[in-house]
Image 1 (cartoon, one colour):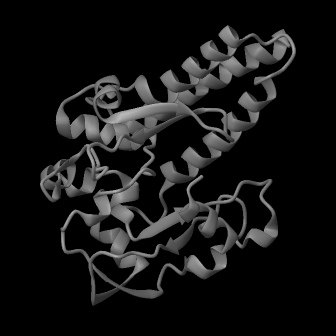
Image 2 (spheres, helix red, strand yellow):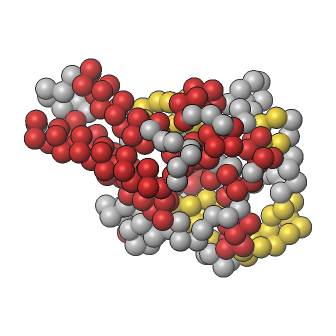
Length: 243
């Protein structure tokens, strides 16, 4: 976890902002927020959107622009945009413009579209004193930023509407529910007696394939996501019977 993320977790109440609270920010399209970034993680819808815009498969997107690793704490596959060059530029940055934003702003990665706003949710096991509200309730944070200007005031609601991000984002909730569940399941087997390294690699492969790879951009995303997760839960059911 980066120092910035540590600081965010430790001082979450300082960053929380309501859906109709006002903040000042105007994007100058300078590309500054796309440089020196090591923390742009993609969800499966982000990969689907990038693949759609660039006419690529999910696997091609990940192999071309991303890095995949096993999360130190989560122990599940994580996909992040892999920075390039001395300035650690986002690989989707050309000049000062995001190639996805230039072609279809509504399909740029969610973390990027929301910036400087962020979203967080708590699982049913999260401590109440974290300040995240009820389980799976979407809360918003306002990140510190050194780019843009303060000449435009808006609410979180209008900021989301600008990028066609629904307030009631059912995928965002389902994504987090799925991650919480998969993390819990994978952690039960990682390091468990009788579970070999090869077995864990196969399990990680199944998770990665289901979450990030098995999608057809000619079909709607969300039904495919739900079908993939249902198949993955079937894999875990078989493991439960084995162990």
